[in-house]
Amino acid sequence: MTATINVDGKSGEYPVHAGSIGPEVIDIRKLYGNTGRFTYDPGFTSTAACESKITYIDGDQGVLLHRGYPIEQLAEKSSFLEVAYLLLNGDLPNQAEHDEFKYLITRHTMVHEQLATFYRGFRRDAHPMAIMCGVVGALSAFYHDSTDIHDPKQRVIACHRLIAKMPTIAAMAYKYSVGQPFLYPDNSLSYTGNFLRMTFGVPAEPYVINPVVEDALDKIFILHADHEQNASTSTVRLAGSSGANPFACIAAGIACLWGPAHGGANEAALDMLREIGRPERIPEYVARAKNKDDPFRLMGFGHRVYKNYDPRAKVLGAAATKVLDTLGISDPVLDTARELERVALSDDYFIEKKLYPNVDFYSGIILSAIGFPTSMFTALFALARTTGWIAQWTEMMEDNDQRIGRPRQLYTGHGPRDYVPLDQRG
Image (cartoon, rainbow, N blue to C red; front, side, top):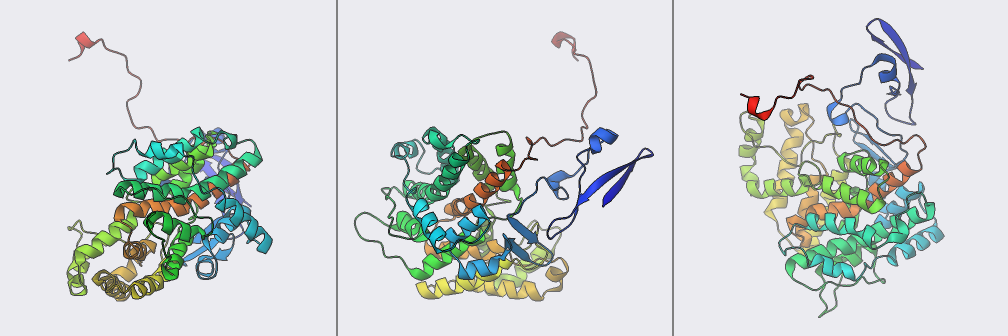
């Protein structure tokens, strides 16, 4: 199957490729050579920049699949490490594969001791994402034996190190901000349980893990593990296309994720719910959201991709209630969230515009209830998304069609003009 493109009376045929599911794509790689024209697609909303077998999203139907598995099933039945194995390797592990993968990740959780002094170079009030950008980028200065991107074995080791060390790095960023000593990893604990202990435990007493909290945080990690070719994932791939080492690529992804339009959305949603304060004030804020002249926006509703209910939000809505009930927290923010969700799902304005609750709507409530400050929310997102980033990076490295990224532009500046000496300019 081909598509015909006519330019200045010249007709060209371009292949149309079909994926296993999802829209077909028109292969326009020869468009410039044939016509002397580029395509114009700000934000790349209609452009497939790569071929991938990892994650599929159908925003209209509210579908998210990792290697073909629905996210709802993975969140309810799987664990984060099992999902990490799935994203990296293509299939769910059998028991022996699971045990080996868990062993490898667990044995890579410690970071080089000199990194502790690296942290002390930051101010105590530094944002955790600023610290994580620096520390993750610096890993390439400590682990030279896994920076050769052309060696498949080194690539695997780098993948394991990044997945394993990210919880340690994030926990150390939190500990540094509150002036508490760093805790070494405990290999007897689960991936998520170990992170909780490193974050909230202290050397003076044992830390008891609440299984409901551990399960909810593990679900959050699963639900944030990968999300197709979003801004930060595309950043990782673009950095990787130049041949940069994996630690540098993931640091680039963290920097992109830091933006409030991407990774900071759950913090913004929680701030909004706190501003509303209580359910009876919802009509006032809904009216403001409908007013085109009011800059107020309802955060946590709608999504760049999803034009239906975000499947991840359904999972976290139930988890939020369970966590707050277990911890004995009566939170007006959750009551406000529940009522706001009910209003939005029954209001013609939101229905017509397809503004459904997204994953950020509830994740902030859960993280706040567990005890994380809002400054850590995006750092936790980065922790989870590292698995997706590294899976996408690995896939890119194995793709024979991959080329260094080089987007084109529509130039609208000055044409050629002559230089005028400084003393002759008016």
